[in-house]
Length: 509
Figure 1 (cartoon, rainbow, N blue to C red):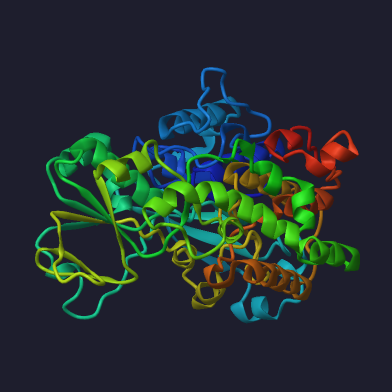
Figure 2 (figure 1 turned 90 degrees about the vertical axis):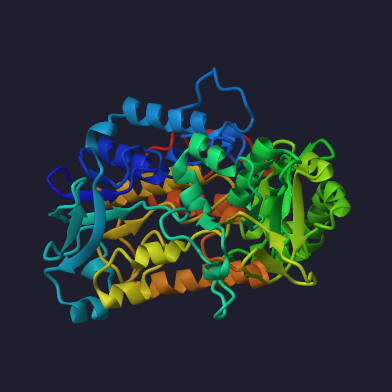
């Protein structure tokens, strides 16, 4: 494999671990990073941003956090330093070409009509196909000049929480153009840096649209800068489970959702009759677990009429859950952050109009904390209209040859999900196994989508594997010829939490 040309696009969490595992296999990939810093979103996140996963769950299996980091939820600077240390320790930095943005990629050597007709992935089920096809990457350097880079295999690690902001659309005369103030997205806010962002917020009336992680972080910084003198208003279109920690009534809820027993309560893709029967019988217990967590987390939410319409279980099933910034509910009580619940909103000259109120929320700055269009980022990478029409954030797409996508499947600990996938991918690229037929891969995808839609209802997102991360990792382990049972006893296997350290000695055969 050392003679094969492999390109990795992105030097965030997924790109770093992908490069590390390929280096271990004797392959020296070229890593293209558009930014001047590594770490992806952690390189530019606001200073108040911290992990959403507890520290032991957010680490590489073979690279623990330094002893100096003791916080349960390390902040963005600590995470960025940790990723930098990982890259240096494993020699990844030598492969990264900073300031190089891949602006387009084209599959050449095999006609598109032939690709469409293939019954085996890449024509033969192997990483490099028949050897006739290759990817040509258009890479813009720091000066904007376009270079052509050729690769036999491409790993897309561009992340789903950056790049293409999700901006709501408005009827004519109702959009940001009607507003006299400033309108930005949290992506632009993060790029400013804390000092400039705080200067912008100082003494201003700020309205934040959204009520998940990025919106909450920006509102927290605004409250810190202005206090109750200039209130920060959050327009909440959907109530979410925003929780202070992963403990309910002093009990770690990870013991309810992150072990094998918890997965017995859920119908799984490809399950047999016995597992189906067990999940059916144990369904009431799943409801009980959810109600137990809700009884605790809803206490401060009730005070502000912020209890979500969906269950805590559904929030986990869709990975739509967030840890509150420090003192979030204290800020709500003191009034430095004000919540306005409204399914719709529009702009006017003075600010933002919401349902049920005749006067606008007078604003100087409006910040969209409305997320990103992750799938569009992938689509935009391709020059082929065919690939653009089918591209989604699946690790291996049945119809896109010699390419993998890392970093789009979410769990309750994304870093270790990315690492195990990277190890699986490196084993595959090194000839460790062949992929099943295109038909079998498509069938498997439909099974996973069926599972996700079953438990997430209207909040369906194809990317979240949080409730079945052990089941998912088991399949990766089996492909790599490894024992998926990582504990040392039956009781531990059933009831102990599964995390990164369980896979420290995972060596593909």
